[in-house]
Image (cartoon, rainbow, N blue to C red; front, side, top):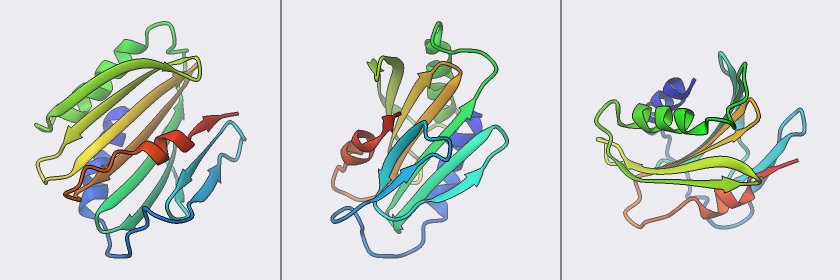
Length: 161
């Protein structure tokens, strides 16, 4: 699942469509159908079912993409989350994308990891992975804007219910 999600980054980066930059102003709230989490996106996001979960995405401009994926796995990951975090990191770098930083922490009382990376195509990205029992969340922000825009508002809007 992680490999597919990371691979989707390249696709998302390649498929950006031109529109106005939506970093400022009102954002659109999204709440999962099962009520377990919510997040904000700069525009109304699109939802798609994946092989093992769901992907929620928003591409507010030709320069930015916001992706939130989640999947329920067969076993809890909280006892050994580093294996999943290491897989996410190796998936990012499998095509030569350098991982600039790797930060492990606890969010909402659950194991989490943040990765910063740069793609060969010149996109700058951030990937946050959170394990909650057997559910894996991944919040990704990718941009090719020159100024460094971290996903502070996007990541800060994510909450568990």
